[in-house]
Image (tube, rainbow, N blue to C red; front, side, top):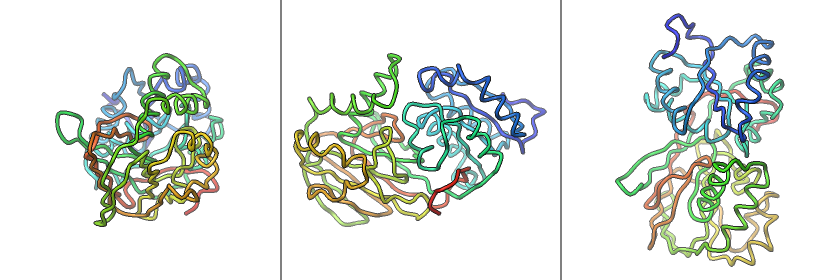
Length: 318
């Protein structure tokens, strides 16, 4: 429970102590000091397991708290986001989210100029520069039925999901760092097979053998890859990058285009801007959102314009 005497205009800080291979716990005292030095008044909750940040955030919203700081990675921020939306999309637009990144990839923080230096991140929160951010929604099958998940940065299916799954397994074993994504990517190439799929993009059908589909509200994924390089977080649209029947050797040969923003220059890679994407496939294709493994096709992606307020740093395109 949150404190009954809490000032609901203050911040709730949700800390994932396991984020960044234990960095959340190791650096909390320093982070707390930075928050205090910047005049940020807050209540505190630590998570004790996967999914708990969602429950903490949902309870906080039910108790009229509207300002939440996540200390963790993209996955923890995704959990918080889904806790916020558990109370309804109308209430979510009243909420302010901020991040002190201590995760492995920190792709959301990169997009919004939130530095890894926690003193600078706390200063950005105290400055209070805000914007209304679009939020993505994915519906998918988890083997028991249709489920939904909100995402704040990127989602996808196919090879991307295979890399995410392998990366998360490595994290569970205590292995981290930026190179973990590249390591997982190269290992996943060994066994991954392209799958025939049908895509309906804002009502227009197309089909192809699919290597991967990336859906971006933000630009970065996988520790700095730019697979949706033209994405804008407040344009009311999803950016979709479809990598079609590309060979494994070609992926290795062109690996740099995953990082340098030129991915859409490849003849086997298509880019779209849309409000809705539906994907069905001959055999199931697994999905992910904000670096968290979900279920599989059939899947649908949509956008909720101007859905939640966020604190951001300098340099973000408005």
